[in-house]
Length: 84
Image 1 (cartoon, one colour):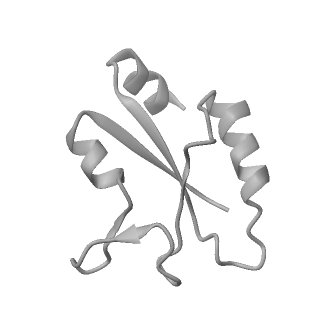
Image 2 (tube, one colour):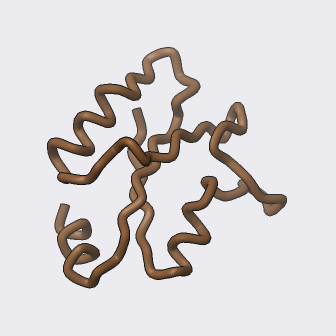
């Protein structure tokens, strides 16, 4: 949470990434609620990702990148990950 406050103070955009959405126990709606309630970040723009199925992943490099997150970090943003 301290990192969220620090990033916000520096004017960085925080991009939530919800990972492991392919798991049977994944609860994306609850994770989005927690992102909003605990971190006070809008979760409607969260990137949904699963390296296993390739959802939300792009790039030819080993392991790929979360769609948009790597580019956004380079432009002065911070990506935050949340497993579900």
